[in-house]
Length: 129
Image 1 (spheres, rainbow, N blue to C red):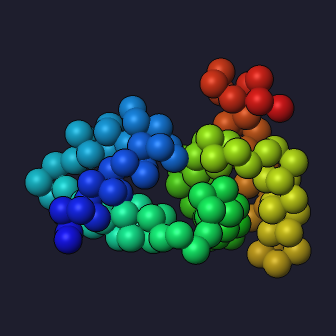
Image 2: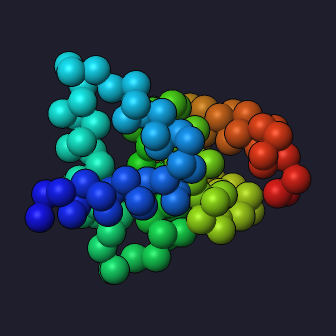
Image 3: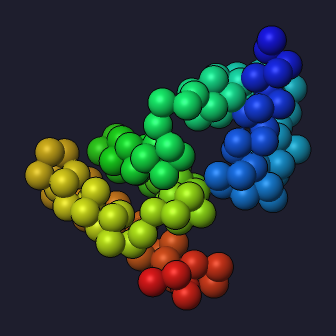
């Protein structure tokens, strides 16, 4: 079962954040952090992202709010790219960050908007406005 979850996790993570980024994370793993990478693939991507209860675009919206509220800009950047790939619009991202502003604070929202602007300026996302 664990190997099935690992393979499912690899597939889903590749579909959401892109094959190249997904493979780079695993290929760059060392003996020290490989167990963490595999755990994340099995349980984050294989078990939770693989559940049928929410569509991927909804999972993306939830992740954006949580990562921004927790002040995790590097993960937020990754999941912004994934959200755009999952069909989330800039207008929906804006609404999530405005909601975030009220419930998690202005600094968290300000940082989220800043990170989103950087992602929106990346060549692969510049035309998806």
